[in-house]
Amino acid sequence: MMLTAIGLMSGTSLDGVDVALIETDGRRVTAFGPSGYRPYTESERNLLRQALYEAVDLPQRNARPGCLREAESVVTSAHAEAVAAFVAQHRIAFSDIDIVGFHGQTVLHRPERRLTVQIGDATALAKAIHIPVMHDFRAADVEAGGQGAPFVPVYHRALAQSLQREGPIVVVNIGGVSNITYIDGDTLIACDTGPGNALLDDHMFRIMNQRFDGEGRTAAQGRVDAAWIARALKLPFFALPPPKSLDRNDFASLKLGDMSPADGAATLTAFTAAAIARIVPLLPKEPKSWVVAGGGARNLTMLRMLRECLAPAAVQAADTLGWASDSIEAQAFGFLAARGLKGLPLSYPTTTGVPIPMTGGVIARP
Image 1 (cartoon, helix red, strand yellow):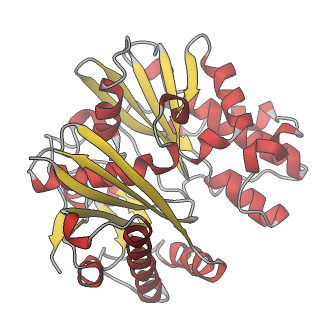
Image 2 (spheres, one colour):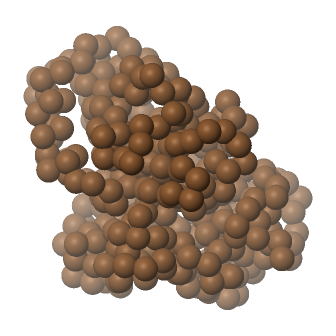
């Protein structure tokens, strides 16, 4: 049976709430609906940054010390507003939506401690929007010993199968963290590869008071410090085989020193591209084509550097295939909510390292 699902995603870049509607049976997508976006205000974003800082030493996943309870309330309200505005704008009846997939805002991801924390009150959200809400997608995977990320690969596979092109194909999502899905027939492998936009966004905010490097314009004016990248790539994470995952703060200790703003942006952009390329020798076969999604797909300097690093494979932005690059992760959580409802696996040994294919998600009803 086909379900009408709304997916909600608030990513590690802390920019806002993405909303997307799809029709799916949890195995394939039969229709893409509209998508939407509700940006966080500057004060909301500052609160979430503080929440990330205060979550570092969380003793357990349900603890909400310091500003975390306030941040959870803000996240919940922002998502409720995002859904209300979305259905109003597109004249959709709440009763026509079967399920909402609510990822929440990750504030801590420490799978080695079997701990992953996404803030957001799903019960309050379900009551506010009068639709059942599937949430807490990652917890079961992490509790079973999986990495708890990445979780979008099953959706990437559904999208890639519709392309009917020769594999292997890799979908790389560049959000705050970068992750890949390797698809070759029945083979599905996924992992985080390293930084996405998080280091670059933090640099642009700290040095230039800009939230991101629009189209990679600042990076395009700078010079890449190849020696800095070579040192950064010696971190043990990059030699680990998949599956593996990261927290957005795992590279916070890397300092640029006295580079100019443009050189820093160029170096961090090149670092993201080089880290993605480092996964190639760890894959079963060299990919024939790469599809780039997420915020990084709009960064023209990032795309150029990826083409240089990944040649001779073809590299193209997801939008050129008719995929909605900005809303793929939101669509994915609508897809995962449908899979969760039907008891289908959300993660696999080759995507998160979990011992067996794992279902997941918890339903909150209005």
